[in-house]
Image (cartoon, rainbow, N blue to C red; front, top):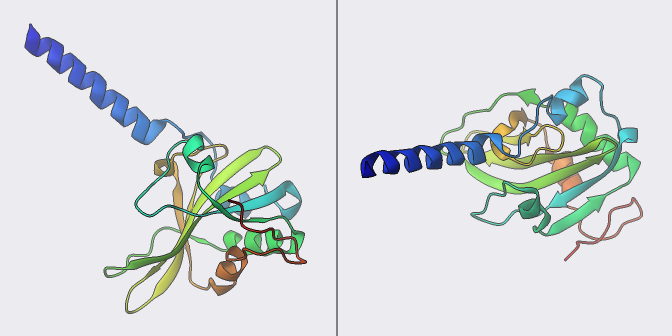
Length: 178
């Protein structure tokens, strides 16, 4: 009888872990890049981008965990928003496999729109032959990174320059929030 109870508890624990890892924090629908490519989002529908600093060795899964991370910048000017959207619209679906790549310039990007928000995980993968800019894009109001679709960009230096602002400028970038 004790074994049956232990097996039942183990099954519940496995079901809970599966739900928390793969289902909780996901939503149905297209991801942000799919919406861009279909023409469903434009600079006029985005109020801001929040550039969020990730913590080393820490992967957020819940809204409260993302909210606790430091903001590097908030991008509100139309030219920068439009520029980022143009680059993200050109992202290619899939993942580029590199030989033991290093990860550089990682940020989370919260896209604040009229109908909700999108979280993007952005980073550069680089090996001794090549480097690519990776984009993991979630669906609307989703926070679980396990539900994200992967994309990449080969030409990304302008994207990095737009994401690295941390001082107030005339173009609408704001100072790093503490």
